Amino acid sequence: MPKNIPSLKPKELIRLLEANGCKFLREGKGDHKLYFRFYEGKKRVVPIDMGAGELSPPYVLRIFRQFGFSDEEIESLLK
Image (cartoon, rainbow, N blue to C red; front, side, top):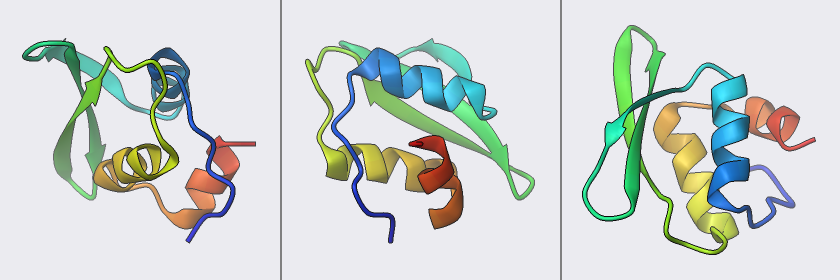
């Protein structure tokens, strides 16, 4: 499990995700935006809460996991 995952602002998280193959899909309900990534032949769609001031480390880790990033990929993303 990756260590030292920081809390991130939604725009910072999106910048990291887009730099690593995730793309904007559409606006969701409320303050959410839906992003997707193809992983192992499947399209993974994940909502991201844009209304939050900062996203907690467990939330950030959950987003990475839902997109299918491995521990090594997550650590390299956050460096």
